[in-house]
Length: 314
Length: 306
Image (cartoon, rainbow over all chains, first blue to last red):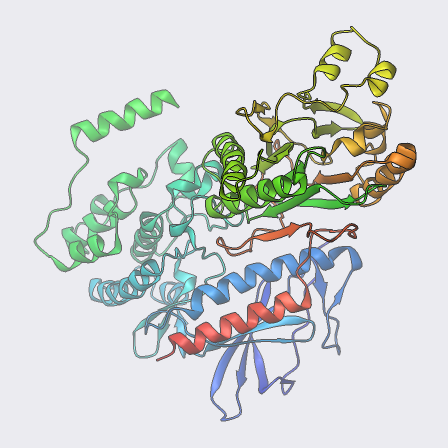
């Protein structure tokens, strides 16, 4: 059966205490709306509605869920709750803020603070190859503050990429879409199957069986890949392909005249395939970015040797 | 972790039920215990109750959310339960410690681990065939296995109820451990007291479980055993699960316990007075669960809003 798409709730629809204005985005698992609350404050509302399990037809509010899908639909709801639980605990200017959670139309809704601006992805598209170092530094230093807060709560985002980094009109970033976030820092077993985006996911995210390798360095890889994407105006080579044959040119080699050596080295440091060779914490990375004189450690002879030995063992 | 479970304990034709059964699961690990307090000894049901309660509590202390080493857990839990029974007897100056059989099983990462002392049994059944079964600590059963007497003769043997290992009692228990047994979807693990397996011909239990429908097959088996037990039917207890995950597949798949908080347990223990109990299918995400999750999230939002 071809995947069908869900019909969004119509403009003007009264959803709990909110009035739907329009649809902002539609994904396979959810629809995000712009809505207004009782005080006419804009909010973003995310509706849990996986189109493989629940379909809403034109003119209906209630989705129809086949009998055999009810259990799976409810299981997926748990994942949606995970995202809510993750975000509820974090109140930081650079992390999207959840305001409310409610049930309606036989599904669940997450109300988030509405931010005006555009995604970093859109910004990259618009300013192809013309993103200045000051912009990258301004966005990522603030974003890292938010990410540090996330990690402090023993959470990993696990899907950081330019389309999940929102740039407000005032130029400050917000980390959005914690649909993949898991309380992984406190667990030695994963809760759910991994989700990742090629180009931005760290190599350890591709390896289902070695989830214990996930850590702050996993999000840091995605940060590095996102910075690289700002410079290249395209996603870097996917990590699983890099493991086969690494064709990703180091930032230091590609843009020596455009960006400072220190920034380029930091980017290359973040996207090392061996997670042990990356900055191990957001703090370490922030320190590297702040300290302009700092030289990022190069792969030592021993490190390179170890890598080769590992490859042999594999 | 996904499974279907059914447990029931009946007094049979006896005035009291000295069997105790319980299961408990965390997000990642399931524990099942059957203990059959020994009649003829003082306070058989007390020994059974202590064993089941002790092992369940130890499980809840250690499975956070998984056990580090299931065999080590079983070994420690069973022998400590033995000592807990001895302590109980000593505290109350009982002339002899009460005794109980005990079979306990842990399932974690789709691998089953079990241990037992006495003649309460565990059957691992795949497609109606016995994959593994405990060996009773009973001389008569060993004689049957060795071909010294027939199964029919064993049923009438005067020493058929004598066992040489149990929890409580004067000597330290002999505890036997299984191999690590990987489970596939549809495998059945069944724990029961001798009131169930005693009256039934040996092939009845695996055959009854071949459908894998433990919710129907378990009470049906209990009915059958109770009927065959006749006027003297012993206490009958049984816990059966149908495993829904598979060791071979990616065990990270769809699961019902995965969003349980890591520090929570669901436990079903037969109460002292209770003789019969209905089906205990795995709970799904109910409306109440959804309401609770939403309340929890909203409480967190309020708490962390500045």
